[in-house]
Image: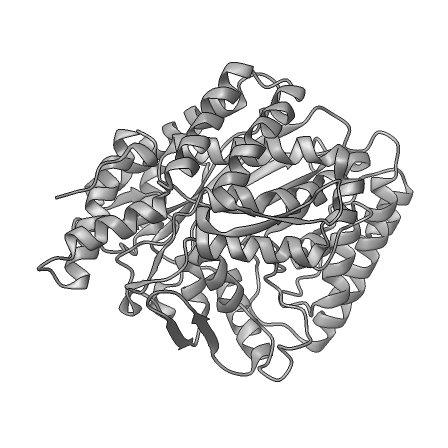
Length: 493
């Protein structure tokens, strides 16, 4: 959700000035990304892990402020709901053994977090949605103490003109209305940050959009929401509806703030221009900088307004501009779930980055052979059905695209991802170890989502659903901490 803000109340003048500053920011960014040398440098990768907090009974523990204070770790940030925290890794060069470095960094952070949380009766859990989450855990009292979150919630609900409606199909369909943003906070993910030079940005961004569906199909870990069995990656359906600012009348034509996107891009600044053109500002905090004056004087503007506004448009692949000491652009890949283990998460991220980098040089023919609407369809099919999803994949031979069962497509794409990783200098041994985890998981169907369903069925015999969910969460956490990849987990009981 980004950085904190200093105000929660805004005037119409604030909105007008902010909108104008965003338009100026888009123009300044366009000049900046076309400046020779801007953002140059070798690719690097970083991870942001959203972590759930539970108590001794495996129920959500709304203690993130106390846990973060006790941990005193600069890698931690508050998330929207009080039972979540975000753990950020340091970036690692993509060449070498980046995933080993990132795993070690996150492992250290999780150990420190667990040690700080234990005296408070709290434990961190890495899972896409806490299985024991109930409606009583949500509501205004569950929101973290943050001016940004409060202002954001008021603004989005005001634009919508009423409660948020969440309707998700599945084995046990869910249809609820909710008055605040805390239901969105139920979703916890693993965000992959990939640094890309502006010259390569459109191709790599488009490749990330095409690549995510088969990766997500093999990575599902969010099958349960409010006690109901839903999609393999229920997070995807939940997030898009739980912050939807559109009125029911405009939903059929107005673009959503939380979406897969609206088309293949042609320029690195295009996603920012699209955010400004399509979406009303909701946090109009205006600074003192004139971005056009700064960029035309040869500097790098902070682009505070543009980055703040773009941060309130939640595409599953998001363009990021970083104006700090080493100014550059990144792609934030936001669709992967948290968990089940650090090894599983590293494998998922490696597969996604490798496949993206391998496909990027081929995006000319891929974009012609896979219409964007079908890439979007693939994404939601993968989230719904996991390894059993039917995905449409581009072919150089007509007709294109062609249907593939996701598990079979993953097997075909793993060697492609290996080429992408090793072509960027990733150690071949590390690439092979991680891609093998994905291959075995997809071949067996042993995703985190599948394990949770099977474990819940076994533990549900003779128990209430609430007790079975608590027992399943305990069994999940025990195996997660042991570290073996989820496809190798046994069932409890």
